[in-house]
Image (cartoon, rainbow, N blue to C red):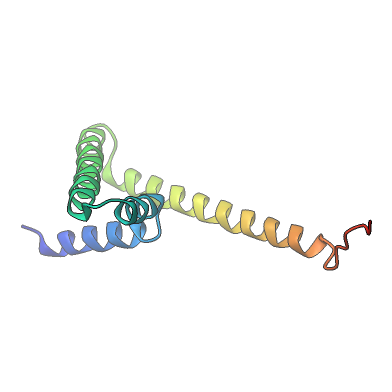
Length: 108
């Protein structure tokens, strides 16, 4: 077993899942149920299945596309997503700065 790859995979998925919508859903389900064990088993098995699908698809795609190109595509994809998030965040800040700070309500 390649322990370095195992650790890198764990760290990458763990960090990418922190604060993700799936974690928010798990918090909501865990807080509103009487069986946190069932919520844990359901969410953990869903993550395992999604990861299995990704690994199998990645293995199949690697038969047709060189791994270096796949890594490059992943890097480009993450950079594009990151830039879009940054730009959307700055657009929101611009909208907040343009909004009047003192909005008064009409007196009746």
